[in-house]
Image: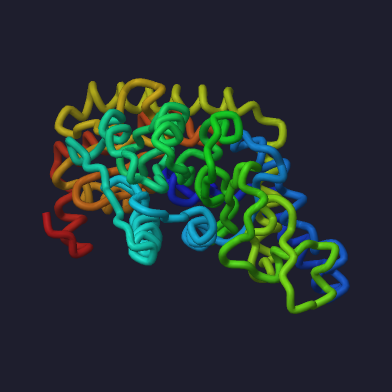
Length: 387
């Protein structure tokens, strides 16, 4: 663990011993065997699919570790966004992580359509009725986050998936802020596709390979952005000009993967091998309940913008305050690592695998001390923060 109190696991998880050990083991393979190591590395990404599939509720052939959220989203949109006639609109939300909107906007423009953003009524959360209403008969595809990155609101995946399909649209999910913190069931609810990263609650390291899910109903399609690593493994090294796609989600791989990055993911996934995700979710909710209750009692000037209901909440808690940035700077100088989001949100992520109630008690005590003394303003000013 990093020194002090670490509450930023929704941005970058801590390093598991197993991740370090697997990277060291793969480095030793490289050291001693060089190119011969590919005999063991060749199918490494595919070997991780069963472990990932369990975390997202999918069949192993429906998932693959590859790319990044942005690259994977482009790859999936190039294949599944098929504008036709008046059905050209892509629906997303005004609170989505920006990289999703960049990719969606580019493909909507290329397809002669538009990117329709569902607005927030309060600047922090989304009304699911508004999301359903946006799914009209001109929509070709929708992409929503399972959990909003700013406020931590959790959306109703089964409800919205059914609503999109009823409107004749495909739907995908960005699970970056939920994978590793709660169970998923993408296959059973019928989601068409999903993307996520592995470096937050899954602790696979900075810039870890991303992940994607493609429902098996779409496995007959040829990826719109083919690459040699997505070729059928049986014919990949025949090096023929013609592309023969791999079966399942593995076809969405493009370039040669980073084996050292996959090694860290390999170790990180082993931590989850024996864990019941329902128990992980229960522990996560207990910690965030504790934090919300502390904030209500001791920090009345900081508004909890994360929904209170368990079914509407992800793994982190967001507190709004006009001096949130200065407070975040002060906490870091006092040995606490929170996260800050413009213009006024302090995000705190009590992670089920390694945070405790005692740590949350101490963080709230420090926040109360700062607010009473005004010391955060001095610390923020020293760091160039204008309050």
